[in-house]
Image: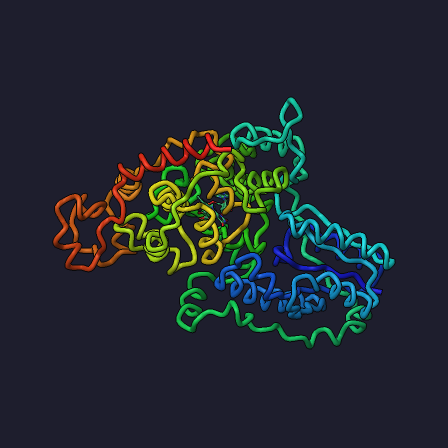
Length: 494
Ligand code: FAD
């Protein structure tokens, strides 16, 4: 007999609900705990998982395997080409090893939920037990509703309820301890599984040597790194977070999204550690930086709740159905210019180049480039959403879809579509000295003063031209008017 934990987006030992439950069950029965991870190239393709993200997961698996081996727990990793073969392979594996129980944390995207619901039934029909747990959100989806019993579609009232719910249920921030050592007899029964190697990154997601070198230095993998990063942020930066978080040139944010996305850090741990530094021990009182940071981590929960309550957002549909009929422009050269950071809008170009170079982009800039694509270029926001997923190391369906919906005014944003970002004003406000632009668009490095935000419009045209920097591909005022009419007409169309 044995118990199996199936790792997915929860690549950590510490504070992992299903793993903890699996360990408890195995220890109580005196049987071995086995861990498994299935690599599916087709699944990565279907989810548009960025190569940099796949690489991060594979690197994390090596760390996980080492840590588990020290506990005499095997981590078995296998490539399963087709995603639909995953359930059968898991069941076959369990039967091979005489395992009676399968444990996993729930993933909330529609395909995954359906798959897991089906697996529970299949397991039951084969005399096996599958247990699924809420783990990735601090408050499980479905737990919060408004006074009238409805699910929230607006962040601020949702957030108030979220905070109150955690205050009333403090056990939601409990830490789940890592598994304990497999007993010696139990270890021997599964000894053959320790020999398994972790496969290389699948060919369809492999990084070039140069990219791999750069990304490995930027984004060390695994849960120990996640814990160190969080501690360092809390020690050095959280106090100033609310003042600095919007300025991309200042490294004022935590950079832990990659860890929350891969599950090398649990959101519970993140919030609890931040809260414990707050003298009041409340989420929404005390030190301002801490409160603000917690309210940002809460956005991640919020978007997962939205996805569970309105699952059609997983199906390429906007949250607000009335925005389904906007006539988008499919201007391929504009889209390419946006992807490559050659739009002639320095803040947009800097941000897109940061994304390509780091697999990451600052939140303020994500909003700026998303608004620019959907409003200034009037390009279908789903093309941008897709491009982000294909390039982000922290790509997370719910947060990305939510962020795009918000920025393109088709999502859970109560602001009307006619609030359109002016990229120039955003640039002046959030990169006042042009430091961020100079870092990522080095050909503008010599341009002095405010001209950096708009070299062609502010007297640095000759310099920009000489440096090979493109002219703006659109005129903001004209494209703003065009977006307003297209959105208005779209809403009016049936
Ligand atoms: P911090 O400011 O330190 O915040 C801490 C954590 O809170 C983040 O790691 C993240 O998990 C969460 N968080 C913060 N802001 C948001 C937010 N607006 N929405 C959801 N969660 C948030 N975040 C992703 O993790 N994956 C994505 O694919 C993603 N795509 C986005 C697309 C768009 C168009 C926009 C506007 C935002 C997107 N975000 C996404 C949210 C946000 O930009 C990143 O989470 C943040 O920049 C990560 O940096 P950090 O860890 O330093 O954040």
